[in-house]
Length: 169
Image 1 (tube, helix red, strand yellow):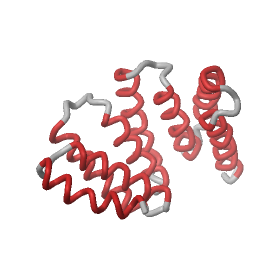
Image 2 (cartoon, helix red, strand yellow):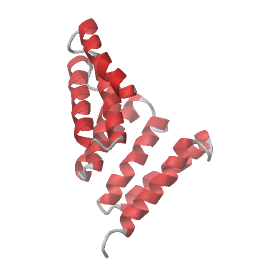
Image 3 (cartoon, helix red, strand yellow):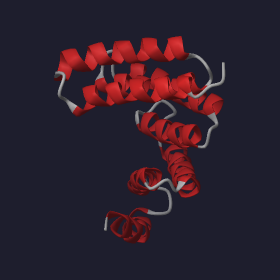
Image 4 (cartoon, one colour):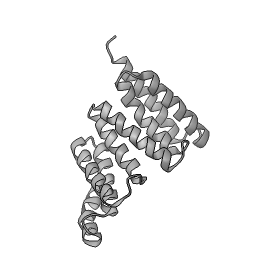
């Protein structure tokens, strides 16, 4: 299993590269994503924060690795219902992604898709819709209607409308 391999890799990485290394940071992010997929939010949060500590120790502040770490932590915060914190982290990640890549890079678009549910959960459906419409146009034009990224935007629309429908009037 992937999780066991990643857990076994951490002490080897520390032995080979020292306690503060990027290999371990990448491993912690992979573990965080696995935990998030399994709805183990506390573990995902701890692994993401550990990756961020390692990134901060060895990378310049605007390194693109922070894009992924902040986005992963934002997803955890969103799943925890901490949507304001999630929004702040997504926006921080988006700003750096726009600097690191370009405004129309797929990573930027994917972050917009991830931000939308946090906005909708705060009652900002129009903002969420705008992001998703832009994302759909970008992914559809770049990858086509059947690409998984384009399909994920359609699922995000469903999620934000479900959030909106569940709110009392």
